[in-house]
Length: 171
Image (cartoon, rainbow, N blue to C red; front, side, top):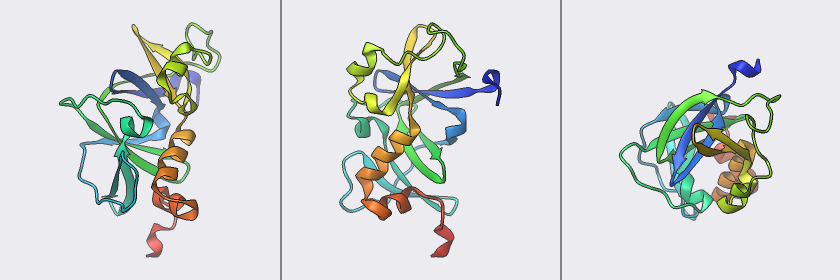
């Protein structure tokens, strides 16, 4: 895919702006009630059935340890990484915007040494800091996000099964 065609979804969690590559986002839904998972940590709501597939769902901000702002526009964003999917509630979807090109200069691309990463406190989940108009945003490392979410839901093979679309027809 050309750098020009790359897009990213920008969304808010609390006072922070985050971005995920458009190819990592399956869809955006209205928040829905989940079936609780016994023993799950705060921030994991449970499981939802999305067109025959069970997905782990949770509150993005709580999983990152951030304060959320319950507004009138919450959304459930279904993220995909490999064969795994997870649905995370965000405070508000902001925009679909061009992603910085891999050949960008520092002013246009991601800053990987930003002090904002340290201030976030969840810098292990972020690839860098970019700029959307006047606001900085945190570009997510979805592989790390999936590891954190699924690690908090279950252990070993169970965690992979909960987030995987593979093998669900075998019931």
